[in-house]
Image (cartoon, rainbow over all chains, first blue to last red; front, side, top):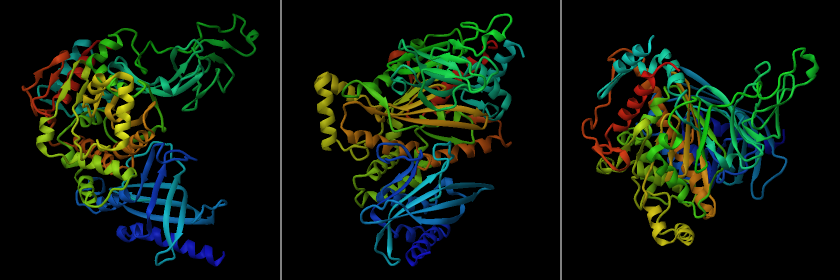
Length: 159
Length: 441
């Protein structure tokens, strides 16, 4: 692994650890002002504005998502979930966008809540702009679940 | 059980201002609902824009029946049971597509897009004569009708015509269509699907329930109020924030809203947005451009009439819940007594400014998206209700808000005493009792 890829992988692992540790404000701090957090409803979906999504957040909506997650009347998180992210197969995307580094990883997230476990598996695309204490800021986090076009129950944790 | 027995049972379960919890949790009642209610009522299948050309099709469910909705070469829409007449395999495995013929994967029996059997391999293998049309055509759903492009079907051979069934609910469909500057709307942006572990009736009760937002959506309302102090930007966060603020309308707004019901369990509610919370600010240039285009087609007076209709949500019981002003539609599929699946469709107004469609997508993700800040608390509530009703601690569910205060209104409709009346739930159960008490289908 190149030193560059090792640094990227360390960043992705740290990002996932913030989510699993529910340090959401700190997690939010990793994102750029023009960031998108996106879970499409179909494979190869090319638009979050012209097509429906499971989640398609700009920075404003992402901030509201984080604020709500801390609210005592977030019923769907009482009791709260616990999650664990497994981040692997980290590689650079074949085509690189301008002004950012596109990184792909395979992710498996297992959620436990209220007596039930549930898993989310997919390919994650991060577009990383330079900046921040870690050397990167997230411009895009797109998680393509393998069952994106399937039938989902409410998604109440940040993946 | 005899027909009278079922009538007595239905009467026992549904009483003035209350229903027995069994209607939500008893699997035998659910089975009977599939035959008596979903087997008879007109069910929404989809919109004609999903199958614009001959050979276009989509597959869906009518209650638990798998069906193909296909456009034949003469332009007619056919609703066919998705099951080969040979050995029974599901014929069409894709959610949608285009096919000149449907060919079974097993032995190649081939059907036309109107369901007619057109080919059987090696026909000489049948000493008594090979199967032919029409005896071995795909089974057709008994009745199919459209209203302004909205396709409904009924599994029952007899019953009220679609127009009688819809009654004044056509005005809600009109609202969705008439707002388009060209008078044309098309389903666009894909179909999103979600499910909850609860009875199908819960979503219909909740969708026109005007007391719940303050409680169920407290966390997203608070997040939106906090965000309003900063700029929400011009992306999906703007639409989401405004809708979540709308959910936080003060109680007098909810109390003052109109909530109307009519025969067959249908209902619609008024709208509760204001300048601050409507997805598009009235002074937004996009909104002005839209009004200009609408006025150009229909004239100022008619445009004003169209835009004056304020209707947040309408329910065509027991399959459809839609937001005509916001071009969102939800098709409700009962899966089991404690499992319900919902498909969300969004419409594009042909000829409207492009950003209005993007706002519709953002709106759909906000209120109907499975990862939304709003819907997820509704889904949690449905599941808590299902769990709660499965336990002892009282056999009756109370539906008495506004009981006795219903007011007769135009078009044969009844209006709730206040917006928070449970009139729509009582009305759904009146229809439920009617269907369930009838003779066995």
